Length: 277
Length: 280
Image (cartoon, rainbow over all chains, first blue to last red; front, top):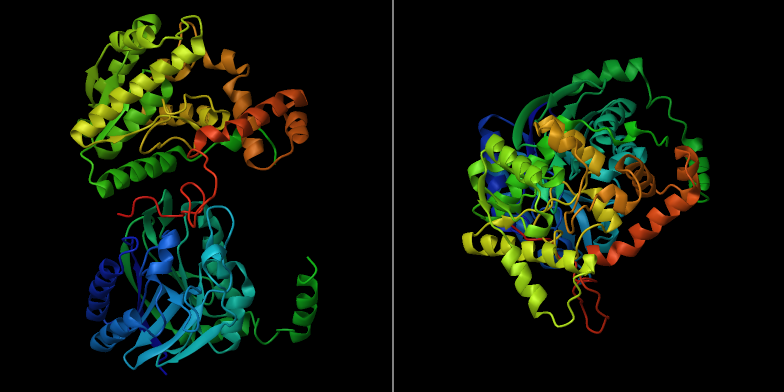
């Protein structure tokens, strides 16, 4: 496993419901990132289709693995790096059951996927109308160590990142499609999730305007001590290169040993209380 | 939440940027050749015209000044001209009096004393002129309604609210005034009493029966799910005043939506046809 490596935060805007155009855009960015020696490139939530596609989602969703992930595998192999992107995933067992998923492919091919667990259905969001929630946190094995995956609103719930950390992820990746009114939450929570888990956290947000929603970008890499190691532009497309060095974790883990001090018995109490809100 | 004027404060620079970005994005993605809007000389249309010019350049914004004899106001025309000049807009001035007269004379039941029905003809006639230019020259119609008007239903259905985009509709009137000052709309335009100018002497705050300063705080409270009693207590006003505003806001929902139909088939316009708006 590599101790240090370069990653690319690919903050893009999407052409809605146009997988071909978005794929081409991602292909260009993958080439650019590879040229700059990145070993992992991360795209935003639902970057294959755009976020506000509403009923069109039924025409856009694909199985994973499926045609788009196969094509992305090919790109990852060719460029020799890992790629994380978001897409609507059609269940293999049903005809219109869809997940909001993150996909990880790499030089070795398809590695895994994560299905968003917390689907916002309030304010301007209507995800539960379209998506079935996932049921499992994931930390996927790569040559860059285990990568934890989560999607946007998941970050409001510390248990998702904590589960990926307990499964061994030292780099937690959160792909997102967050409109501007929520910037303050994400800027605080990205730092908090990194610090409480003594892990790196890469946050990659969408930009552009979809049905009046302005996605604010501001993608970032946060170190285990909460330091913002890299920050993309607000509101505009950007490709930011930054370095992850796992040797930074040990000093934080000794200084604020949140993992050592975890109290498993409290989670039983938490479960009971959460059932009776 | 404390209902003080502070709750309506925004970062005006950021707000202006958001609105400009929204206008630019919509025009570019739609492939339109520019924007056409009605410019009355009032705070809302002056601000919208200015923001449009700042977003896509004044030469791409056509301001239509559409006065008519009955409500002709030289000061409003002067204010419109100031904004045209300052923001480099294209402009056209058309007297719509003959068109209005043709309507009045051809409607068998026309009642010249009924200000509301007559005033609505004026707003809808202006809409026809604006959309003609939009169709003819491949431009988008930009609406100037603000959030106070939109929530209160203080507009003409299919009249002044008819537009392709409405960039300031999420800002209350008092917020528009602050934004207007920030982007350089002259003080005399910002401070004059608002009027839809549908009949002579019409003043918005008199007709609504409440000042915008108070109305906007009530609406802000309702927007944030506050109870009418709590709003009234905080603002030191009678609960009836708040109830009246709430009732008017809820009653006007029909003016803000697609026409209602009844569900018969599989997917229905305005109900469960949930499509993205213009995929570009």
